[in-house]
Length: 391
Ligand code: GLY
Image (cartoon, rainbow, N blue to C red; front, side, top):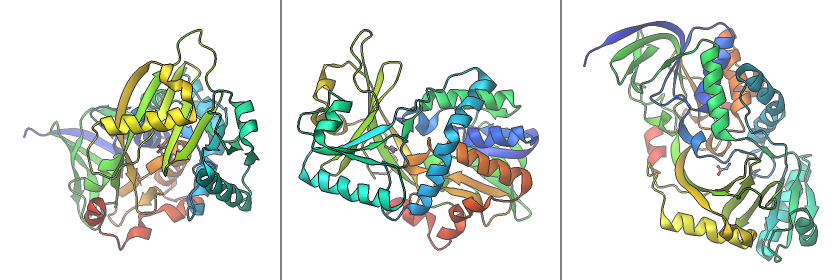
């Protein structure tokens, strides 16, 4: 392979999805010479994601530490969106619309009641509504809705616009875009020293940040014991379109757990209605299946029967990068010079602002902010990466 040499950088970010781009943008803003390696920067899981900022409605038992990070990022969103828009002139579709999580049967209702009690015990803002009150808020909900949770603080952003704006902001801040994938991480003198790219370019960097989403756990050149234990969790998602002139369909995100599966409808101001998402642990497959589409439409139809009249404009599948405890991996690794910003699983869009701040501070000062300490790779020091991927 012909090898050319790119001039040295302070920071090389491997992966140009929203997490890699926000890391690169914040690093460049702090005066660091920064490059991103990705054949299609601005792509990745954010092209598929719905963009719910659902810290409270997606709360899970045992994930209180992650909740604090999610809430910290949700609080940053308005300023973050304004800063990105100021920097680029691009609108992110950030919408402070709130979320309604509803129950369709007695089991769902009991589950939501438990979730509500848990939310209240943690001091979160969430209001229990009767089925009638849910329908008063969202008249197109099915008549059988048995009650729900009104969470006015869980908003949404358009992840595709977010990715486009981050790419633009990174370029404007001086980030070099290397449009090739990292073939392998290079080491020299016992530390990470950059990467060799697929196009033959050798990129030298003082620090290398692995932000390659679900691929982060299989990056060649990273010693086995340093590879992050990331596995892909497939999500299939649909996009519908509300025709111009049609009456407003939903005024906020509406979601439910139907037969144990999450279903949500995210209405955008531009008329797009995003319907998601499956959660499947079948490795690296991103096929859209008839069964996935059927189940999403079936469950969403139970929630909002009128959706079947809408044009279906897109079906897509992506891979969430999941860690063993569903929280991200941020900060240093056991290999000097190699850092992680990966493993954001269901919360990549939500965690983008706080990840940028954490990585920007770490890269510019050498210190990880105290609130990020629970998210270092050290917590998985005993987990073999490859075994986790196939479990
Ligand atoms: N946070 C939504 C999802 O992962 O499907």
